[in-house]
Image (cartoon, rainbow, N blue to C red; front, side):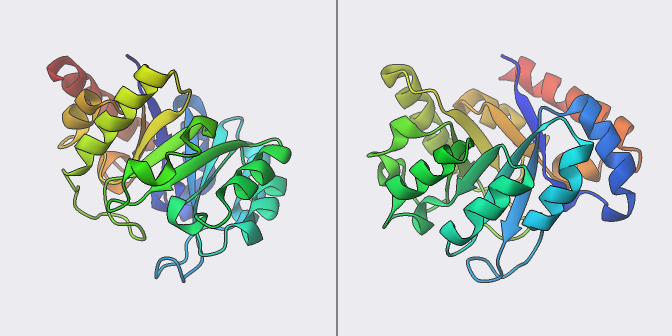
Length: 226
């Protein structure tokens, strides 16, 4: 199986954004963009304006992860800015999940949902069949560089088994500490999209092309061992 690779742009060098984006355009499958409001998580990163600025400079799928308390306030601006996937946290749409899903679809975008480590798959059971992607957080949300939570491997396998049994179409994506130490376990559990950030890509070498090759070597080793 070939895994889709989605670099997290909050971890890239914004000083070298043009040069790094040129490398990613040649090598990545999609780009992961974190939107944080400073309330849902105590951090503020990228924004709809950032999406709008990079959209003309990349042909890749823009996958937007919404760590915000009120997703409905952000969905239309994010869609207009050029997002392809719009992915709120399941915990933030419990009151109006079907309305939010329909809103995203009506804007011509794909629908993803993000599950925090402590949120079970059963939380989304009534609309899981409507999803294009499910992101499993393998760290608590909000900051880069946190330690991997191994208890999430069972959740990934549960989603893989459900997908196979029910014929669901969602991609299983992993967000948090995807790197040499975790690739083998993630691949064995059923991961399909790996979000790579500081530990998995951007700190492997100052030359992003070299860093990418190192990352691919690590993934190949893990795939053979899985």
